Image (cartoon, rainbow, N blue to C red; front, side, top):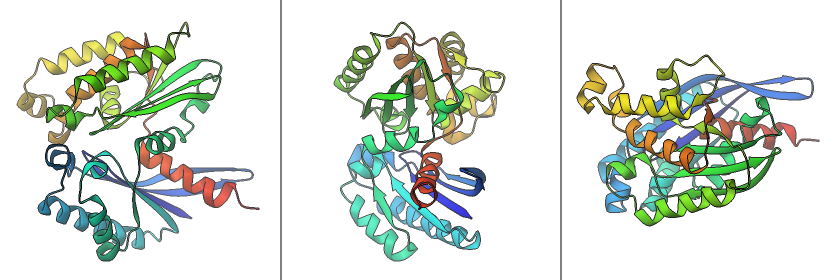
Length: 295
């Protein structure tokens, strides 16, 4: 059995095809194929509140390709979600209709709260000491989702319009930064220690660059040092000298700034990086819908 997840983000579009593994009472999944297409819808959406015809055409072409791949892989169920860029684009629903007609994919534009809920549905904290306090930090192109857990229970969750593409386009607002800082401080100040759980493509890349042992957390000081090192290179040299992909080399800097800011406000000294994101959460919700809740 195979499920598929599609995430139309502000920076990139992702398709994850996963093999579902049933073992007695437990159900898990193994990643089969992951495809990432850096369309950068946020450049249009955050500046013009409109997805251009060119990018809309590219998005529909990508969805047709994803539809064909899902057919070839014989996917039995899928879910497709769009996030921050499509939320802000005035023609978002028009594009949803075109994708339904031309690519035969049902797409839903979801709000930030639902996005955060799906991301932490991965149960990444299952492999971590549940008696402790954790702040999920998911940084995307258009928004940052924060969710606070204590003793395995969700205490607070909120989405903020601060993301890597938004920052690069100078569309982030000082008052939104202030709101995010107040949210973090208000919900973490009662705890002596809080650890971070970081998700998103940029923190995964930063973790690989840190060369930490698999499963070991990334410290605030190590992340700060890595940020300073990367920021000492020009964009061109981050691509040509450090070998970072062109569509990652610019966004990794504002992403680092967001993670470091949140960690500083919450006094987080260590952040775990489980290498999961929205597509992983979508697969988990499909499992729960189809397999875990059946009679």
